[in-house]
Image (cartoon, rainbow, N blue to C red):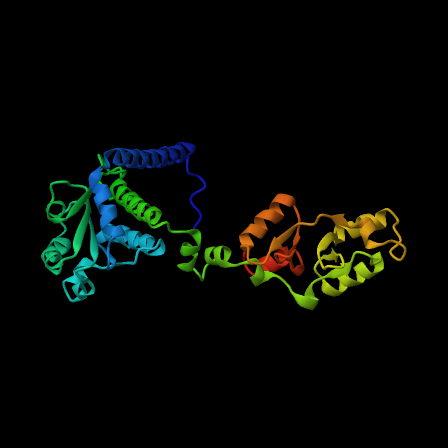
Length: 332
């Protein structure tokens, strides 16, 4: 349903003012959180970095939602992690935890019954506990091996009731942990892509030029002594919008595109009396087959071209592709 169009401008301004206040307050709380980071944070990073098992994240209610996101971020950045619901843990799911694991427990109050109940068992198993709470003197903070404070001075909720600034602070702290561990692991973009093979990001980071290029007879190509008519036939037959021009050693020496063809006809060039060398662009852009497809996209955008020729390390033409091929491979 469309909001009431008769809402007063004053009401709209009030909503905008509140929205800005919420965002600025939460940003301020995160800034203060950054200023309070100490050696405990470094200890938490070391525990996660050297964990021989998995990182198990747990929390109730809104803290649980934040915990799920922290576990997902850790898992996608090179740290095996999963979320365990604390209520289910008391009914069998504690069997998921081993003595080599690290448990990250979230509770703003630090007194959530479901979390406190499972702490003794976790400690008996030998797993290390990192707590993230808003109360430094809470039971959870005292019983953990490392405590990280996500304390905020106030919630962004106008009623002061709904977890808002506190959940944002806990989420930001979890992101900081995950990214510090990522950095120390020297986790790369390709490592990240391997955790996301089914998405656009994975395709972009894992696809190489050799995966998208056309090869063999599919490559539009003529010799540098060919006449323009031969080049036009090759372009029409291969349908890539250009043809490569090579010398006797099959090295690319030029390129002729649909745009060049229009310009040639505009200048009344005779296709049967003109050699391709007279109208081609020299020094064509090339790329190696083992380079990443995203590099090809960057090159094409930089030079404002729609196609590239692929060469081997002997500078011989072995492939070609255009923007349509990249779109088909979902690289762009």
